[in-house]
Amino acid sequence: MIPTRKPPCLPIEIISEILSWLPVDCLVRNKIVCKQWCEIMQDRSFMLKNMHRNRECSFHYREPYQENGETFQSFYTFDGLIMERSTDFNKYRIKNLALHRVFDMPTPPHKSEGMLPSYVHQGCYKVVSAYGCGKETNQCGGFEIVTLGREETPSWRALDTNIFSDFNRNKERFWSFGIGRIAYFVRTSKLGSENYEVVSFDFENESFTTCVLARSCFPDSSKVFAFRWEDCLALAEIANYELHVLVLKDYKKGRWAEKKTVIPLKFLKKGPYMDHDLEPYRAIDGLIWFTGCIYLAYSIAKEKIVCNIPIKEVPTIRTSLVTFKGMRLE
Image (cartoon, rainbow, N blue to C red; front, side, top):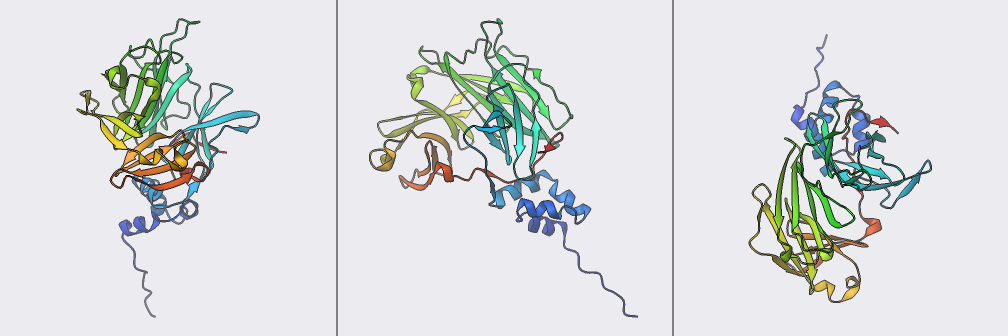
């Protein structure tokens, strides 16, 4: 009798590498092949690698859309997930469009003026929300947070801080966005001369750091943008066909760059872009991305546009395997 030979087994590292190039729908079908493959696909580092390698995108409505008589608006994307708010009720949800899963968030106790998520550990996310003061209820402004993925029915809890206690969204300019595990909230008065206050929130240890920037650096707050410059927060304005950028180098020490970075934007002087209301969205690897009614990338070194995409044709959100406890099938 001829002995049977077992087929050679590939190292798990090689299997993971091969699988990481496959589209999400293919991975979902192959999860049932064996326990080892399923465990590989549930590893967060694999999920992130796959999300960056596969070029598939899910479509979502950039404009408000109707669903069962309710209007929803997307406002933040992360890890292949999308956050939406109801414009009719104090209601929020998180969706994975590729896997057709959704998580209905618990209703925040206060109306959110800025809500930001971040992954923390072991399949859990935290979402922090800033809210303003209310005249009718004598409510002070502040922050609250919820942890997702740990319990089936999570609940919001207040963060013990006096920061933003006098925050009034109607009278102030306000920006919020996340970089890694840090959430940034920036505010200043619309008409007065108050300094720019930057509040940095560390999701890991739930601690706040504050710093200020003199209003004299950007006197007209209506012309100011807050955006991501590499891995730092930056404030900027466009003046005389130039982008004037001031970067917060160290948020813990409140250390700003010694001077502004001035970048000529010659393309604004003529051509199809001069009438567009563009604003900087992100600066990375020598490119500044602008958004508005068009989406374009400007090379700082070449001083020219290297990518120009109509906003309707911009890839919306990368597909991913990311889910967390409590998400349900749509």
